[in-house]
Image 1: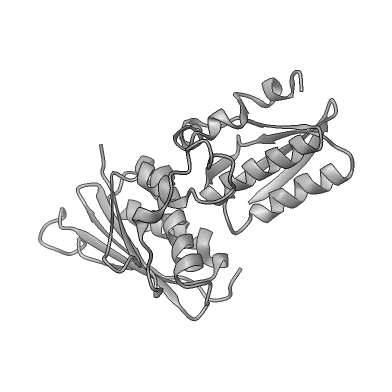
Image 2: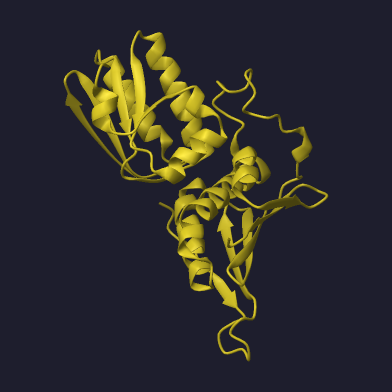
Length: 110
Length: 155
């Protein structure tokens, strides 16, 4: 998995390239926690380049969303393809997490 | 990344009288999460070569196999690198039955709670088996609970 982080209008956008799974989820956790420690509170995780996510990756997103929320910020997800979107639906995490079609829509109003 | 490499053993099909004969695949993976992604990609590629449609393998097969493999490594073999997880598949008419077996004591799948209930939804763990059951067309266990069979049918 490769991670790229950029900032746009005060929002940290983290793009996940490859798979988000139990053996690499720590990388995403660390990237978000480092930005949080540096004062960032608004995050978008972009899955436009992601192949698949496992249950550990889903669990990390639940934890990060909670953690960022507790810090007074917000974490949104974007650009899930149909397969990835179905994973959030069948686990009902689409009701817990904020999911947007595109990065632009996720950044807007954050 | 672990040093040694993984190798899939394939039998059946090629050279047989009938090209439609079931094809069998076998892969042994050390219980080291560093092998996880490589094992999933390698096995999925061999499943496609054996006749599983790429669109089936791209997502459902990979996610279900990733979940079963990590469960076997973590909960079954307790990440003991000396213990192996055996992955086997039979591919026939585009359908695939994958088994994942560990060397552990097994577990009772009936005891796993539904992770989508309100009290469980916000927990970070406990979704692996549920995801498998949702993605696969059929899921079975042996009596001991250390081997799972997942059927993915080509629709």
